[in-house]
Image (cartoon, rainbow, N blue to C red):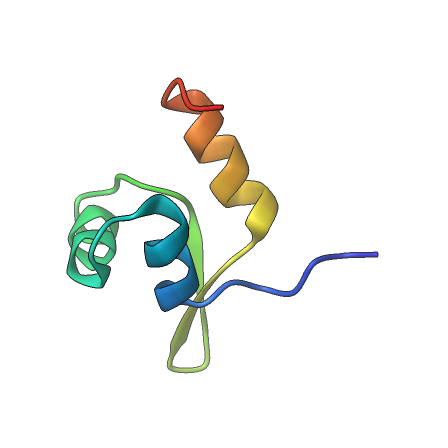
Length: 58
């Protein structure tokens, strides 16, 4: 079963970075891949996990 998409706030809490940092990273082409769903930015948990692993995380 697929996990629900993560909100910006959830990713912010997970990575322990401010929401503003996620938006800045996105504008610079950095950070986990996120997609706009209507007017909302959402992240797939597996994309967030993959990005953390690429950064040398757990």
